Length: 121
Image 1 (cartoon, rainbow, N blue to C red):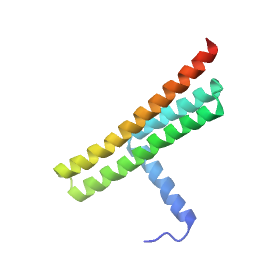
Image 2: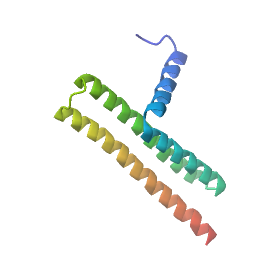
Image 3: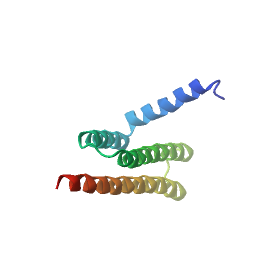
């Protein structure tokens, strides 16, 4: 069924994020670290361009986790709970995308942290 307007589409998107936050432990962990990163940026007065990098990293990880959840959910639905080699490949690839996004976020955090620490030394 097609959404009647953009507000209805927006509501479904927010609902998807909220349901993922409620059902996926890893998403909640990633949200926790995202909040810590934002707080650290504020406390240590990180430069605006570095905050932009941190924001890109945060959103990249969260977006990939939402996509991973969608792929896992659809794969489980289509396989009726049975393990199929192609389903495993799809789920593993999606999880790998989240892993790469997380590594990217860690690299960004280290680069920003080294720069910030360098200002205090």
